[in-house]
Image (tube, rainbow, N blue to C red; front, side, top):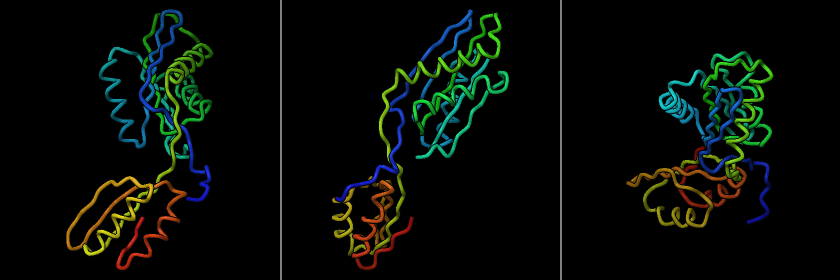
Amino acid sequence: MPDIPESDCYQTIAAPAKGVYKEKGSKFLAFAYPVSMEEEIKEHLKNIKKTYFDARHHCFAYRIGARGELWRANDDGEPSSSAGKPIFGQLLSYNLSDTLIIVARYFGGVKLGLPGLIQAYRQAAADALTQSTIIKKYAQKRVVLHFPYPQMNAVMKMLKNAPVSIIEQQVGEDCRIDFSIRRTLFPTVSQKFAQINSLIITS
């Protein structure tokens, strides 16, 4: 395999992690999660709100995609840009994507003021990321192969020697295999598959 450009490489966290920050009686519990789609984010938010139902705020920020093209920051009732934005800022600071951070705040009776809130949410998010293991990830492309059953051996041999992850397969008179592959490798692999007769590639 020729040298592969790193243009499709980005960073995320390997596993969920927790952080905490305390200031003037208020407690900020931070939870970082690796995610790849918005449905996962909704589920994590639902679980945190259920578990920490007595927290006054559940603020969050996330980035998804190789370039962080899908993102959001939410203050959940805190003053504008005092919570979601500093949380999001930590994702940028650590150069992370496919990552969600939720911070649940327990109010301690003393107002922190805008600078204090920004500092608290930033530090809580940073603490969770400090506890995280950061890993490389590569932008993936989903590919679908359609082919007649007699070509099964040739297709499976090609897949075995290619850096792909099979998602789903249907075997019958007409076969279908879905797989994901690192985006920058797709052109090379597609050329090899094009050599198999009666095989159709869609993506």
